Image 1 (tube, rainbow, N blue to C red):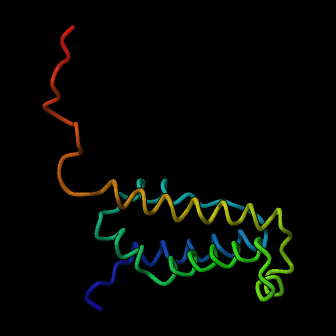
Image 2 (image 1 turned 60 degrees about the vertical axis):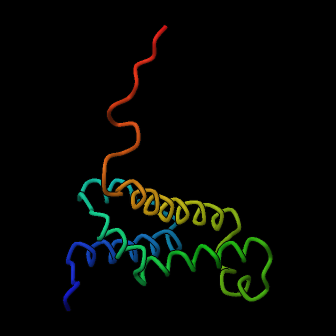
Length: 124
């Protein structure tokens, strides 16, 4: 496998576990932003993360929980064991994980950030 990255594999297992823990136990222990910053993820690694199946699973779970909260009959049967207040908490948590990954990906663009240097000094 030419693109095998053990760091991403570890993150995938953590994401699966975070999803399972959130749905089954109602515990929200994982912070995507802290993990990515702490492990100095590159833009390429973050792109692989956003295209991965575990990240797609989180995105599809977000869509399913949103449908469940809006009264979809099929999803009501699938997520009937989760109360609506807990479903809202899980939805908020998973959305936070997704948004943190996307924000980190955007912040890792190559080049100098806008306004980092050569700002014109204001005169009074």
